[in-house]
Image (tube, rainbow, N blue to C red; front, side):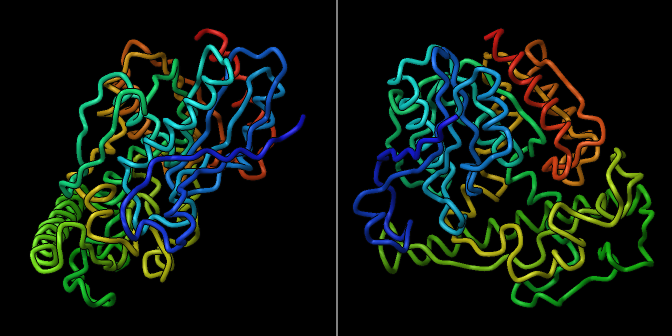
Length: 372
């Protein structure tokens, strides 16, 4: 099989979207395409920021008769300035590219953080409702920017970045400017609280997580109004969100139980990752936070999936330490009546070191694609 490097021009974004002047003058996205002679179905695997040009499903699905495009958004490698409303426009450019090459059926493969992105895309492709970002900035999307796909395959799919922030944010932070500040009564790493964690603690903990995210949003909106009043309608500001990986499920396997190992995240020990200099959502801007991490984000995966009409395949990795059974249940409910489910027994989040499960996932996705 031959892999082709693909370059696709996309619409201009906003000032400061990239530190590269060339990228701003001629914005484009990049992908790796594996053609399959005679194939009528093509798939796209994509993530908001991760490089999926080497994704583990590309070659196996191509071997099963599906032409595959591993596509990146313009925000490859950094979500500091990411706007989901632009990211779906980039995905649309990839779908257009495949349609122009004559493919009759397009399958969107939403792996990990790509699940919410492809669901958001398909919802808007079927009925475009967005005219601006949560910050109020116009995005000028047109229906022709978002050609509809024919099916969605979700595998180890997060519910969306707003949901991740709501359940991973550390509610023990009492001073947003001090990464070490803590309320011990809400500290999951304080052994007096667990593990195991009591139902009462979990109620207080989850409520406090959402309350912190709402406080950050209130602050971000106020700061954005202030800075734009002074510096113009496109002004923005970077900021840091401390301690963003504090989900008690990482330490207590009795919460939302599956086959995962206790005491870890997909990146490493939760305490280290919670305080790490480079962790989920650590660096962001006011407009980007509102678009992807805030409660006002439009990137709610299940809510968007419920607005689509296409068939859905949902693959659950049963040893996932990042996507849990309750997450898969929400996906299934959102696509009720259209969802086919499959469990990869013992599958970790990335199927790392599990080549047989990669084959099993590819077999299931390829079989699903034949029904579109």
